Length: 195
Image (cartoon, rainbow, N blue to C red):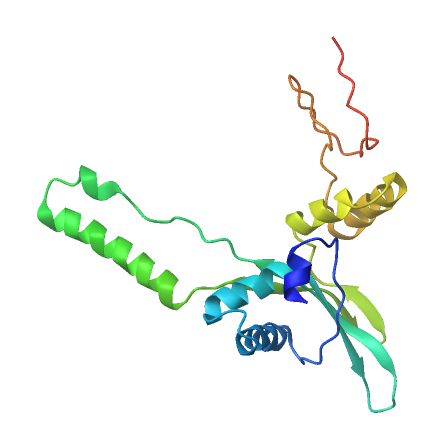
């Protein structure tokens, strides 16, 4: 499932019985390790996180009612280069050693406490009603728009603005002029420029 979701598919749907989002990631990672697809836990987890965009968690209460308890977005954490090369500017050995120690601390922190993903609940069920809790990430908003027709984009942009105050970006840029617009452009047409 993870492999097929990485290539040749717009989306992949599957079911799982994990109780929390971290449990879902761990279970899928462990399945990939058991299947022999990967030998390293971190690499397997990175692959899982790249595939999981949203988790729609269903529950069945003691009365037998089934409902969506929450919708969770998975946001992969991109590793940033936070190293400093200021040691070249230092004149003393102590200064150079301090810069080296700073870089070594960053390196070992990244190696031992590497955060591969964050997760946020987009929607939660509270006391009989659904509540929007966090906005969808910019990356997923962009990818969602790319797979919508014009009317869906309009409705989606309205939803984002009404619920999270997110303005739609200008979808098209002219080579010479970039204009900021809060209204979506028609897909498939270049923006007109005034001369």
